[in-house]
Image (cartoon, rainbow, N blue to C red; front, side):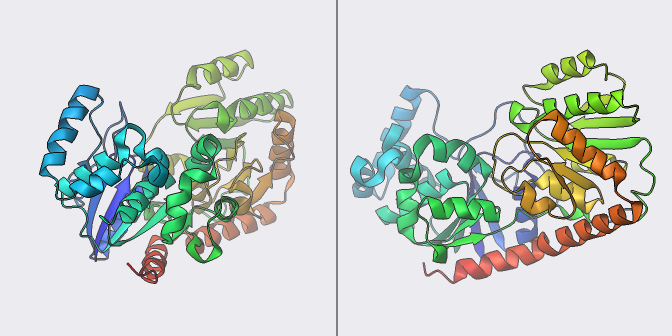
Length: 404
């Protein structure tokens, strides 16, 4: 099958959920093409010599310079076979925000120039990319079936900013939309998507994290207690709560080590907080790491902390990785975190250092046999629910039920 993936930006190493999906679809023998609608500044691009599809990705973002964009659009208009449709794409009543800065018109010309309307299936990551596909479908340029994946970003940033009306064209298209968790599926239903067209599709785990199995005695003697977080270092991740909770644990005389993997705007503030709390020797900031290195750190840890303070919606991939490597988890009650942790960890009663401390102490006070049982349950849950081969098979089966 010829499949095109439309993504917001050229793929970067952190986007493991898309990388895993793309690699497996290639392994299944499908012919893949990546169409990117931009590029993240300052981020290295993902490359894999075994999967040239990443290096061959097309970036169809418009020029940032208005004059260059205007000239490119003028040239594109004269070359286009869809001049009438290009003029129709300027109709604000029909296409709403897609007419802003001539977005729909630009992408029509860019995709036409690269002969990108002939695939058997288009998979759009993020709702605003699905909107473009819906607009092109309504214009009559895109005649193939397409599906759209909604992630936490959609509900954290776009839905609050633009509201349900932003997705009117996508709803009207009738093509399937996939939510990254049951929590997000409820959100899609709330903004008007039908039950018949809305599905849960978990973001699959990199198979690297399944093998070899972690030791079964991982939680028998957690001394010193080794905690870890893998996240963007932003305030919404709640890592200030983790550091303050561990300061309270330190005062109780419990020996621990806390590894923080990731970079972001809050890194220096978090380092400063750790110094103020007297934890410089116990809290390590390791920066952004590759998946194999993250796996090694997980293998030497007991507890994964995810005290997010904003609802991002999906099932966090880093939490899946931690459970797959035999860690138990503590998290807030935001988004898909409770659904994923289930009986494989503890949820914070509220978003305070005291609540996080209480959950950490609950882990320490739980009998070793019970911790081992929870470890096994977590590993089984991830293996059964996040296998990429099964997820991609289900995805294609659902998509093909919808006529082009």
